[in-house]
Amino acid sequence: MLQTERLFLVPTTLPMLEAIVDEDWATLSSLLGGVDFADKWTHFPEALIWMRDYARESPTDMNWWNYLIIHRFDVRLVGTCGFKGAPSPEGMVEIGYEIADGYQGRGLATESARTLVEYASGHESVRLITAHTLAEENASCAILRKLGFAFAGEHIDIEDGKIWEWRKEKT
Image (cartoon, rainbow, N blue to C red; front, top):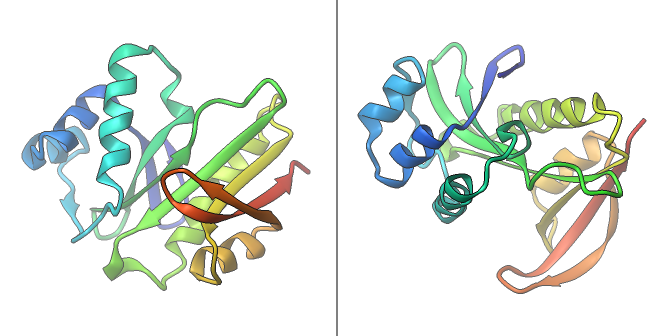
């Protein structure tokens, strides 16, 4: 588990992912120590279904995948964050994050993303941290700039269309 001043970032386990996909909120709450759930705590449930399926078939280090973001003081699941897998042979990892609508604008996404960057930077094998946003100015662009990411170009993603790539060299 990763901790910040206001958040616990809890690595998902297969039982947690099973509960999420099954929408078994009582089980998920129990697995997370009795937390409540913010409305719309995930905007990408399909990603969690994919992660569940991947975890079923591929033993992996879950610290390089998905984390559930728990607000420490509200004792509430407020979002997800994580990596798109372990560092590549070239030393690259990609981060992603999302915060429930009702918790946006409080710096929680920045806090989560900063923690992921610090976690990745603490590993000798990591040389480059990347992220992708929609191809427009938005809150995620501001977060990434604040954390020292530089705009690296626009790409076409099969699922998302135009996206912007951001990069941060490990310091």
